[in-house]
Image (cartoon, rainbow, N blue to C red; front, side, top):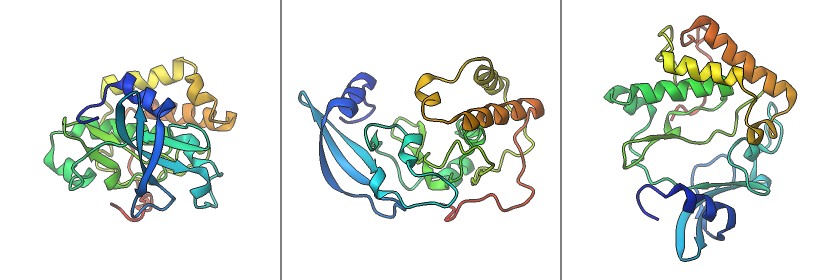
Length: 215
């Protein structure tokens, strides 16, 4: 599949396709493999993160793959061709993707993302941005580590505030709720409630809430 994948075909490939391992992804902290999917004549590349390849972390339970798109004992996600020269810092400097980057920032604040590096923001050929590597998320305790602090004290746009209200007014989607324990679910809603109360993006006054490496 080239260009923007048809969502239905992509989901079928991820759920039912035959998998062939092409090789290991370089510079990944956990075992991460590039694989090819094939089903009924359609093919696509995907990224596979097996549970057995996870490096143990003292502050997160095993099974990080469950916090991404999970299929079996590991996560399988469609590979997205991107301009790998671009990342959060370059995209912010360009200016045209500011709203999208704010949405990624808001997601990370609600999800309590402990590992938002600059290189996790990918610019794809149709000029959209994908935020990848979301495994260190949804911890019940404060774990936020991100490079996205440039919007501190700026107001959260009304449309994004409405998204927060929807998180608070509705039950979490079953696919998400089934992967989070009760403490994690309550903490997620508490973070959303706090953002709505202030109405603005926070500031890291400590200067310590950054991942490493930054990119």
